[in-house]
Image (tube, rainbow, N blue to C red):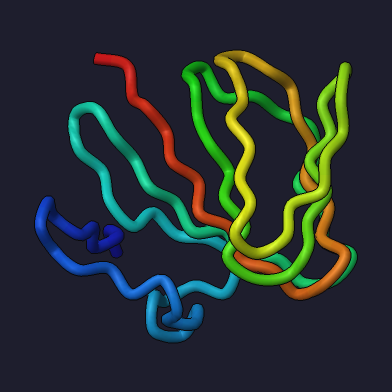
Length: 109
């Protein structure tokens, strides 16, 4: 079944749990020609192994605590904090607690 994406001007409930979205891990909330919003939900100790995105993006912590590690830097995100990563920057995520993240990607056309 294809994911149901919000459309521009739709209100997205960032507090909805995974059962409302149909996933307990992550979901794509919005996808347009230029923008994509993803919700990532992590349990304590979960690791998103190193990978990269081919465009600039931000990771915003909505709940919990998550470590964001790159080859040159590490930072900890807590609610209300975000970090911007450049295109092709390898990174790893590790959750210290139950956490939810909002990822905003600029898409290439």
